[in-house]
Length: 212
Image 1 (cartoon, rainbow, N blue to C red):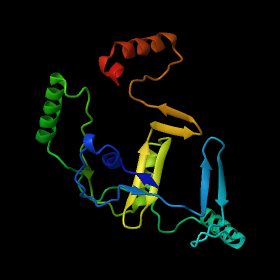
Image 2 (image 1 turned 120 degrees about the horizontal axis):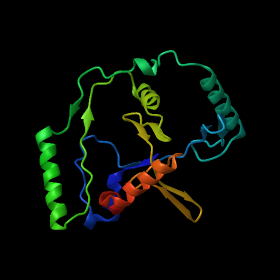
Image 3 (image 1 turned 30 degrees about the vertical axis):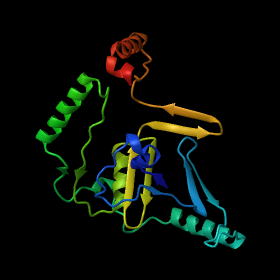
């Protein structure tokens, strides 16, 4: 499932303002699933896991076997109505949620807040919209084709679909250990010692990167 960013308002209501809820997508949606397929890109393997979990909460070996067979058939039968990712394209013009002038005014306002000491950084964003008729799964496959990000996800919520593509690991929890691996405030490594030292120097001299 997923936890939406605006859930922060329920944890720290004094420090948060809710965004306009115009998409009517829930802030949180999670579920327990009786079976799943785990793809390991490093080992190039696919593992089917079936727990036998039934809708009433019981577990059944027969249900587990049926789920295993269902996944085997799905994984070995190519879909007939799924277009190729390279053919999936928006069917109309891409539009932004704000105009260029409005976005520039937001940037100028953020700069004033930074100069006055109210904030030290801000993330400004806008929504891009376009008609899409190929389906959510075709969009997700297209995303993976053009940007094979290591942290991607697809979720079919029946009345909504989420296709996510992210190169950044925010948090990973394993027992009592928490791992964060942000992209902000970092530079790639280079096999060239001179280039590697140059990137390190640029990172250390950037007030923006050091702040982040």
